[in-house]
Image 1 (cartoon, rainbow, N blue to C red):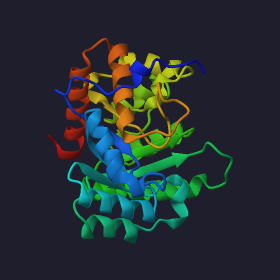
Image 2: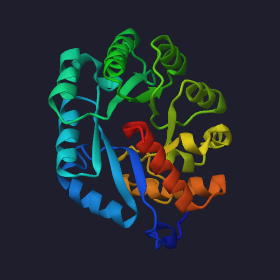
Image 3: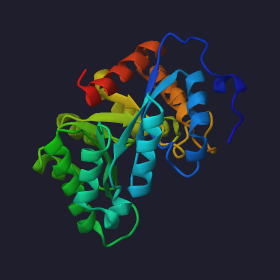
Image 4: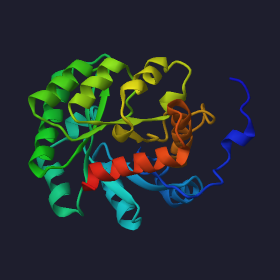
Amino acid sequence: MGKVDPELRLPPTNHDYKIFNSHCHLNDDSEYIQADHYLKEAQEFNVTDFIVVGSNQTLNDRAIKICKENEHCLPAVGWHPDSWAEYSDEKLNNFIEQKNKIPLIGEIGLDYHYEATDHLEQQEVFIKQLEIAKEYQIPVSIHTRDAFDDTINILKEHNITSGIIHNFNTDKKQAEAYLNQGFMLSISGVVTFKNAEDLRKSLSIIPLDRILVETDDPYLTPVPFRGQSNHPAYVYFTLRYLAELFQVDLARLANQTYQNTERLIHGK
């Protein structure tokens, strides 16, 4: 990989806008103990608000704890398709009924990337969580990987029309289907990768009022930090790249994606 101009890694000098990171993992083993450090770093990059996303019992508990201690963090709880065997309706209902208000159920969904025989089990757990989200009128954060047909069919069959397609990274066909279903599309550092041309082309059909930005840290690190561990602050670099692609002012896109996230989770 070629050298990156150090200037491109610096924080912004304009602090007249704020950024909402719609999907981060401050609850991950690599970040949890130093969550306050990562939050402080993010402030330098105008990243002020965060959805801390769970994926199993432990990470859901951690997300709740972090968000109780940090007013600008909101928790999402759910069971990732890799954790389907741990799931029960009782566990999810307990989070919703006994904890502070849960603004988002996630990350939930389907992951067929690796060879496995658990597709039906994943679907069953996915559907159960969708039905609970619908019952409580809570939007969902969807993880879908190599499972587009089943994901969109399940969303249609169960009339799920409010949520986020986390780390959207595919093509126009899929973008159109999710937009028609009422979903926001959250863009990660993948958009900065050399091999993400289909994703970049799909942006031409995504309205600015339907786009969110995320890190999915510690994964999917954007250029100019590609190859290193991702941080919640680095959503700034994804946003900056998107602003160049859309040919819009960075502050305008920051404010738009912030408002989009607020509208989804608070109805504002």
